[in-house]
Image 1 (cartoon, one colour):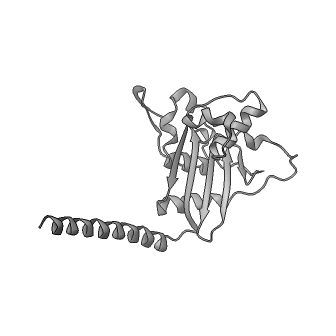
Image 2 (cartoon, rainbow, N blue to C red):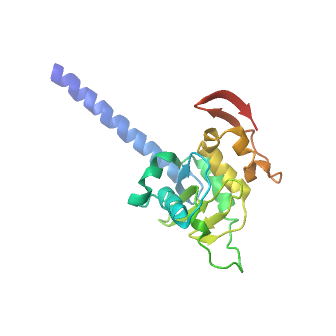
Image 3 (cartoon, helix red, strand yellow):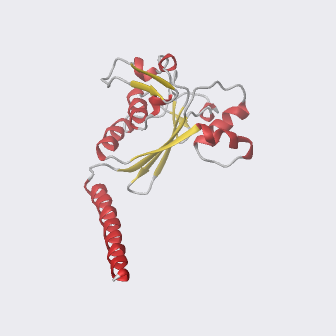
Length: 200
C-alpha cells in the first residue's frame, strides 16, 4: 500500500511537470512576438569608472565572461529574465527603432556597461545590447553605438526591478525618468536597507 502511494505521488509530480512545460510552450507558440526571451544582467549600485581595466571588468562582469581580476564584482550584479508576452512585445517595438549612429569614431566606451541585455529570438539569433551609466543611457548593440531610446531603457529597467535597488537621489539622474516624450508609471522606490518608500 505504501509503495502504491509513492507511485501515485510520483505520477502526479510527473504530470504536473509536463503540464507546466506544455503550458510554457503553448504560451511561446501563441505569443505574437519574434522574441523568445530577454536576459538582463545589471549592477545593483552606481559607480564611476576610473580606468580602462575597471571598464573592462564592468563589461565582462555583466556579460558573464570569466576573468579572475573581476570576480569580486559578481556579487554586485542581478540576473533577471523577461518572458512575459506583453512585455516582450513592448520591448520588441522599441528594439526595432534602434539604428547605428553614423560618423562616430571607433570607441571602447561600450566597455563601460552597467546593464547587459541578451535578446534571444525565436529564429535562434541572439543580440547583445549594453547600456552605460544611468545619467547617459548610451546604448550599444553588438558593440556598435545606437541612437538614444529612453523608452526602451525604461521598459527593461521597469520589468527587471532595477529601480528598487537605487535611492531617490541617484534616480533623479536617470535620463529615462526625466524624458517627457513618453508616458510611464510612477516609480515606487523601496530599498531593502531603507524602510522609506517614495515615488518619482
